[in-house]
Image (tube, rainbow, N blue to C red; front, side, top):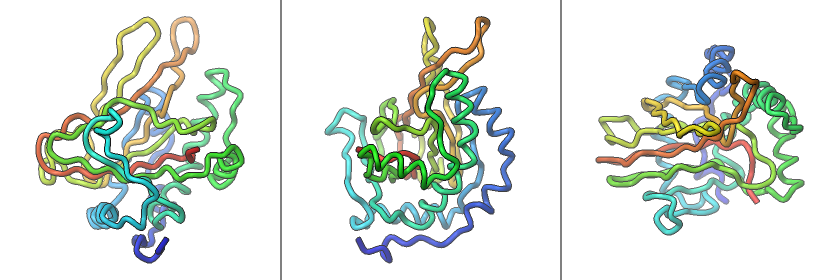
Length: 245
């Protein structure tokens, strides 16, 4: 890989994440299964990341959704080493989400406990044969969409992930809303549309989360996707914290 070609501007990811109220974010995740980090990236940073899509050397594989029944559009998985901005965000976001992930697993009676540092979790993934990086860039055009799904790539899965919108709604594209659905036991699915602007990130549950009910805590199952793009082009950066088999 030519690491220079995939370089993005250096940024202090820890500094930019410190401005957010993580106690409030944790409360939103507990209540809704998602939370928005507004203006995490600048328009210039979004454009730099979106421009990487044309550089094949940055990626390990390209998926055309229509060939697999995933929807319409396409995405590419980055190869290691990740672009600087992507690697820094992945490393800096993880420890802020670990307390939530461990608390959720304890509430749901799951024995899995996640280490404090992302590098230690990746070592766990790699030891189990999950060695392929999962951060990705997605590209949608007019008429494209992403079916509801879960990003589970092997035995080890971190229960939270992040999507960053790199395009500006109503300027670069229309439609293409980020959608979550939540299935509670013996109830119909609840849809949620998460409004995002360019540079906003949404943190959301990958698979399931705990919910307090009248008789105690129970699990709800979540899926996410993107509604049909009515016009224009939409780019998204996805940050998944576990690697793939």
